[in-house]
Length: 124
Length: 107
Image (cartoon, rainbow over all chains, first blue to last red; front, top):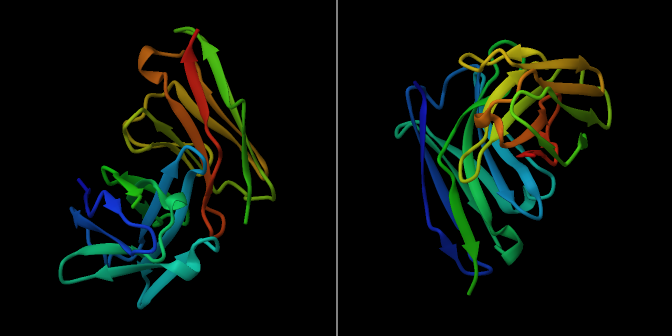
């Protein structure tokens, strides 16, 4: 059974950097056939996919165009986890942030395991 | 980006009703379409993947159909635990995108 455990701050000041971590158990961040995603949800923007990383003989990274310039997703193989960094935060970045595994083994990708969610509030 | 449009945005139904939710993609996505159920305060749960494949453990009253740009999620007989918000999501190409959601409420 795959489990994802998120950690990180719930309150961040404007212009600062958000760092969230997702610890994986029951799978490996290096698994070929999986992708490791960050998604956020707010009343104004709904469910918004932010980015992902995955390993296929080398590491790959994809980002949503709307946040690409401010965001990075990074794997940490020794600790079997992955992280999200978002720079230059504004109040519009206030949302519940989720990490999620995508199973891509059958040629289709679907988000089958999710973290518990972290409410991040951007406020001074 | 591929835009995903769900309808209706909300609906009222009774236990035992047949419920259908529609999702339309702004361009063809073949059958790279997934459906999720979300309850308040919880992360979304996968119901259907590849447009019509039932995720393990999901009751058979849930079904999905469609291909190309038009997709349907059907709940054949609504149960009390099915009152929730449902989202479609395309995995045809990055960026991954979600529909706006359909909230199923008790009539």
